[in-house]
Length: 483
Image 1: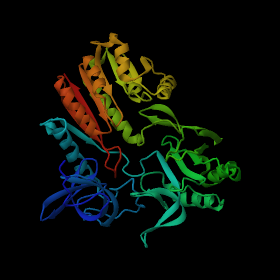
Image 2: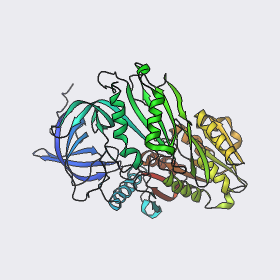
Image 3: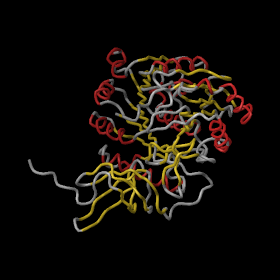
Image 4: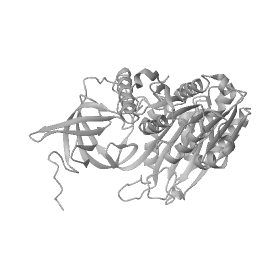
């Protein structure tokens, strides 16, 4: 067997300093190493053209390497100063928004050309929908406790009680959030250091990642933009719980935030896995309510700590409006026909559509039973009729309900990041709907599915991009396919 050729540029685990020269989809900066052997491409997520960065090689092949970002040594000339504390979750917060949108549009359309084989995608482009709030737009944040912090001056990890976010590239190391990050609630984040001090003064230990031990694990906060209320969840281990007074902690939060406190939940998580809610743990209400209410396009939705709900509700309204516009573009095709809302989650799109297209029969399908229960409750609360919800795998549902074949005018698709499984997509195609409105939080898998849809006779009529998460690499797409 011939010996594997050694990479002449980098090897796995190597630390490199490199200038970022270009931008690829998903927030991957492109650097290039040039030497006597030629030119070699390096991809580093969450970086920008013009930055000089320190990174570690995670994967190396003959043609390219993928790296993990460790530090930004020099910023790009495009970046500007902002009054927020930088966090790994907002790598582009210093980049002006128009530049962010430019990078996102170019790289996303390129995906549809390269993966979806759509050559004239620019002609199909409808609009770029910006977030109404470009800062402080999130309605949920998870802050982690850690027994290992980071000294920025000495550039090394140190033993200290931290509450904030993981240091970029170092899973065992936390960094304190001492002030507003620009993404979440200003009052909450400017008081997070007081919450950290309260917990530290109990003498109970924060979670130590390498040792898999400690008491404090996470502090999770949900916010309602409708009521301005905050719902808290403190996640700890059960060991030494008798030494921590949960009711006293609830009173402390009320002293800090007053009537804004909707409730405090306490979750026990003794698993070593890095998750806020353990599969074997318990969750209990300590104070107030266990839910908050949010409003989308005039409809009210109850949200528990575990519910899935759009993270940027104001932008979600714009996203859903675009989906409804595409679905209702030919309104006579909707009237007196079946609309299938697949991967429907808590049924938000179906409910909004039902409130606007009263003559349509709308059927929502999702595999998550709790999401379908929420969908039914929300539809009842909003007095919306003409909706049916089923708990089922989408592919299985289509097999079990052959009566829908050739009766469907429109199918709405809103799958998870992995996109639609090829077998399921084939079953969806066989339903022979006139149009598909495909919403995606991962345009790479949507572009992949586009090629299969085009082979089946569907063409892209319109495509819009929705910037749900400013200052990150994420982008949502809404595509209207017609036969």
